[in-house]
Image 1 (cartoon, helix red, strand yellow):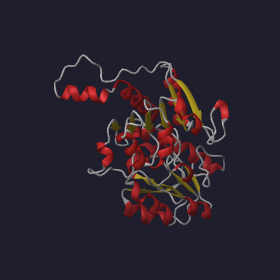
Image 2: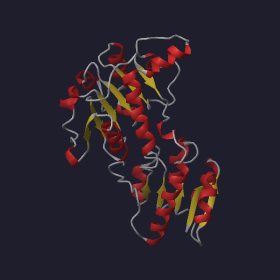
Image 3: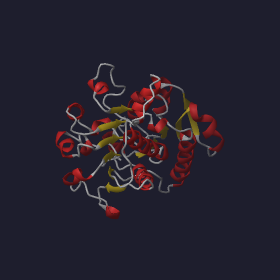
Image 4: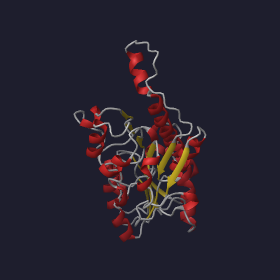
Length: 311
C-alpha cells in the first residue's frame, strides 16, 4: 500500500504511521506527480491548490484521496466517481475559526468598526459612533447549517440574535432551499455558510438583494461564486442593502482595479477566516490518521464526500 503525503506535515504524521505503509513525501508539484502514478492513497493539497486537481487526476490507481479543505473546487469529482475513488474532506477542521470570523463580521458591521479603525489611523477623535446597531433582538438567516453554520448560530444566539437556518432537509426547524427566499425581508443579517455546488452558484442575485431589508447586511464566508457580484455591486452602490462583509470573492485574489474594492459599505477580509487559527495542521493530521486506520481496516471513514452532491 503506497501513500503520497506532504513533507510539510511529516513531523506530525510519520511517528504515528502504521508499519508497512510505503510513503512518498512530496515537496512540490513535480515530486507529487512523480509519486502519485502508482499510489493508493494521496493527501496532496498542502501546497498551491491550483495543481491539486492535476495531481489527483494523475493518480489512476488511487483508492482514497484526503483533503484538508471543506470546499472541493479543485477536485475532479466526476473522474473520482468514475474511478471509484473515495474522497474525504476537512469539514470541521477550521469550523471554529470560520464561525468566529463570521460573528466578527456581524459585530464589525453592526458597530462599523472598520470606520472606527480608519478614524484612528487618521488620529481623529469622534464622539459619534459610526455604527449603532445592537445585535440583541436582530434576526439572522444562516444559509447552510452544517458544521460551520451551526457554530455561527450558537454564537449569535448568545448575543440575543434570533437565528433561522437553511438546510437541504429542513431538519430541526430549519428552512428548506425552496422556503427562505420569500422570507428574506425578515432578516437583518444574511449569512452564507453553505458548501459550493452547482446549485449554489449565484444563490444571491439581484432578486434576493432587492428582497432584503435596506438595513440588512450580507455576510459571505462560504464561496465567492454564491453571489452575483455585479448585482451586489449595483445594490451596494444604490444603497439597496446596508453593506456586505466578504471573506470570499471571485476571483481570488481580487484584482486591484475591481469595482468591488470601491463599492460602498463593503468590508473585505481576503479569505482569511480559515487561516485565523494555529491548529489546522494538528487537526488535519489527527483526522487523516483516524481515517487511515479505518481505511486500512475496511471500516467507514469520517467526512466521506458525496461525489454527486459535491460535499
